[in-house]
Image (tube, one colour):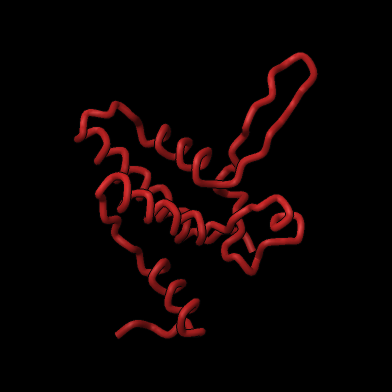
Length: 125
């Protein structure tokens, strides 16, 4: 299953929050630059070699991510691809550890973690 709209919204929101945080710290980056850096450094990438051009690393676009780890195919696992859920976890950890920034967890993200640890998607009270 492809990444959910809620995951996509979270990814874009967090990219904006991180860009704003970096800009406040004097780092001149745009929202789009932060998104691209996250995809290249924390996400799924592939090396591409075209005759007559140098080898390049290309980032998988966010709409191509699978929603959860159990949605990954054999090909995905062989290539060490991660799910959108895993990417969001990596972004959250990076922001907290390297940027001293606590990202707001959206409802979907909380439910996914609840499902992983409890085995259910019950609403939080």
